[in-house]
Amino acid sequence: MNHLWLLLKNLAFTIIVPGFVVGWVPLHWFERHPEWPAVWHWPQYAAAGLAPLAVAVFLSSQWLFATRGQGTPLPLDPPKKFVRRGPYKWVRNPMYLAIFALIGSQALFFWSWNITVYLVMLMCATHVLVQLWEEEVLRRNFGAMYEDYRRDVPRWLPRKPKPQLQTVPPFSTREK
Image 1 (cartoon, rainbow, N blue to C red):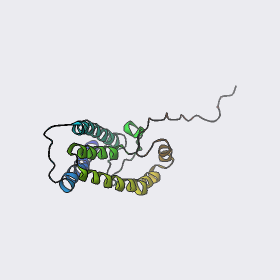
Image 2: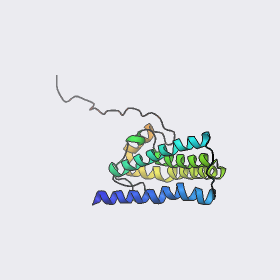
Image 3: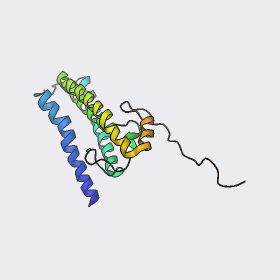
Image 4: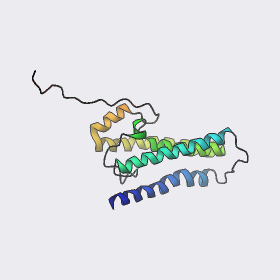
């Protein structure tokens, strides 16, 4: 029952939060009547390629939160275990980047400056939220493990993962 409950909470989060931030807000508040282009050009093809990639990153990151971290992206129900796999090896905030990419693909597809303004405002607000609140909570909850992670993995710009150092005892216990 615990796994089913965790799955339902993650599903509800995905429908409500990204659905609101990616779907409803940009298309209701910022671009009320987007027009589907009659003929596609490079922006529409680029957006059509970017959107599924962003969805895949978001869902794989959320899957890791649920299965490995045993929690949800919702701050009221955060993961209980630290997650440093998959997209989290490359960047500390892959779900936010996926959301930004989805909104960016909308702006590109509809060639909308209004959605672009929304994207920039959202990115700025998210950056402040992450720096002032999320990172402090993670530092408090996971201590040195998070500090090492913070040192090795960039916040926003993905980078090839560094190999993790293997800890060895300083002295051999066997006598020669």
